[in-house]
Length: 159
Ligand code: FAD
Image (cartoon, protein in one colour):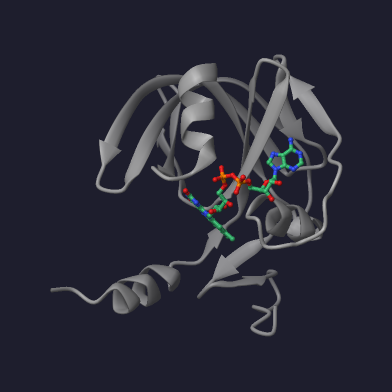
């Protein structure tokens, strides 16, 4: 049987950006760090995210039917760590709004989607999102490689 560690190490060698997915149920906003994000189709404009079936985010998006993908800048490593549950301290986040969906302020891009379809695949669920609105800003991306954050100049193995 394929070794989990080897699989994780191999997938970690695919360098990605970092996003925070945001959604809202009633008056409760929920955010989650994700790098399993992909653009799928230009016409119609579709993207996908892959969410762990154990994540709180799964039920939130299933109920709300919409979400935003916020592509983080290199200044937003603390935001990524916060929404991945990697920091201990409680943090008040002030969210922005795009098409009435909560977004992370100062992201390089916020992409607001309505859930088009979902596919439960293994221990994750793919949400195909139909893009409704986009906002972009200039800046440099936060990167993720081999389980570590980095910038365009260098991957910070010390984190
Ligand atoms: P929780 O663990 O409850 O929430 C996550 C954190 O966000 C908590 O600290 C919570 O306090 C905070 N938070 C949520 N909403 C708010 C709010 N309104 N105000 C303030 N704080 C809030 N997992 C995946 O399923 N798919 C991926 O593609 C993926 N990619 C990842 C990429 C990276 C670089 C990292 C570091 C992690 C990734 N993860 C991914 C793991 C995922 O981010 C964590 O497992 C996360 O904790 C799961 O979130 P949750 O929805 O279960 O909610």
